[in-house]
Length: 116
Length: 113
Image (tube, rainbow over all chains, first blue to last red; front, side):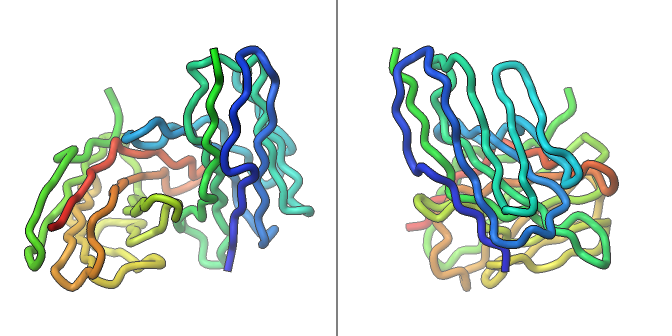
């Protein structure tokens, strides 16, 4: 069964720093990996999606990398801002012989605080 | 605007009562999902549906039921058999092919006392 781990569980840094969030998964047979942001009491917002054949994706100050063979992904946030404060969740979608869109397996998230 | 709506945002029920959570999407997505989120536990999959009139159990389906009579709608019923129903419930959808990028609704917080 797929397991997803995110390290660290919590992180507090001063504004302006570059930072890296880590995600690891146990089964490398994935279809894709998604990074989400969740604000308190809200739903999840998709930040980046990386297909299994891709190595990285970029959106603005965010860059996500994927090393499928080692079961790792990182989310790099450049020049952090107080508005980046949120919980960041990593999730993987498995590959199934029958096809179709099965559910994601989530990590428990990294709670990020950017100090002004 | 295209998106996923969940209603209500907050729901309160007495123990022993069944309750139905609404989820509607106008993204024309084929697949829809229900997740439960508890503090310190992450999101866990309850049920999912890849097509109308068909659905599959996720990891924690006991005490829940769903229906998929329309492509746009995927209501979740929390029955009295669910032992710990108090949680934050999230509905999601994806396209049926290609990217399978998942989109989420705003969630419903259910409190059972």
